[in-house]
Length: 396
Figure 1 (tube, rainbow, N blue to C red):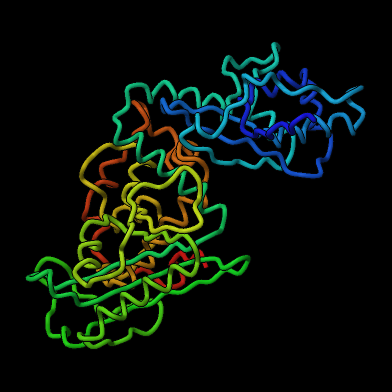
Figure 2 (cartoon, rainbow, N blue to C red):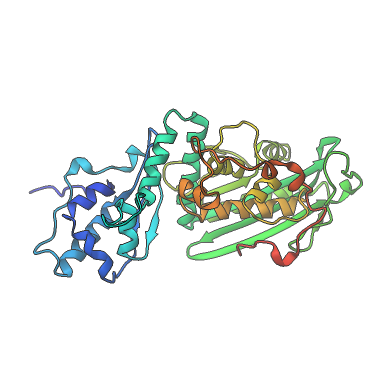
């Protein structure tokens, strides 16, 4: 008895899939499709990116062409050596095209008609990817790691599983062992049901420890609800129970902006951090505890390898996300998750960067910000003159 052959799925380079259809994919723009078309920008272990089609998407196109009577028989798949499995890729993300015309523009570089007076070709995502591949040659491993993390966060977020929880602590500026506030904001899924929550805790006995010398005091300026007062003795248990409860969602992604100090605070409180992993796995797991840092995500977006990380206020300003009363733990957690959601919901890193800051990467992939954008006097007043609450971004 013949054994059943294993089913192997993966990805094809878009150019291979395009040739597989014997150019009949060109006719797709003139027909309505029953499903949206998807390409998957993939990153190889070398850091090089390519537009990919999933094997399932190639199958769909093959059968669609035949069902529409555009081919006499179903076109065969590209030869097996063209199939790329996920083990040969660092990351894969998805871009959905509503129609064949949009898809064709992404796959094929189109030139203007010969009678056109313009000497410039029409360019699309493929040309942008090729340009970025050239710019990324010899790139610092720090930036390559950040870019890989960025695409994995996009991929995991799109699956709508587990929980993403931003955490932030504030402490007395003269003694960082004196924790004064704790804030959080989360979005998670239990099955198909989405759950959202945010909050702010003030440690009651530590109200006498006030900041003002190095950071502004905004303990009582939580902008998204009513602050809760918790006794010092009950505070560690409260934080620990909060973290433990997150496990009911499945995989837990703790989101920080520059995580080092906040994780030290968690450890000092005896929080349950067993198995905490700073590296995201290749595929979304069913369980686990992982760190996501928006300073790294933004580093990938602006294309920098700098060890100095952008402050939360500076990052939000550069992303045009209004903030108010930073250095309140609840507000900081709220804006941290807002920034993460904005990046995770967006396009792949290079496309997103170009949309945000067009034509600002003359060398490599690092954005050349203007002097006034780099001036701390423009953004880090930290809520002294807060924007109108009507203008504050709220992804919920």
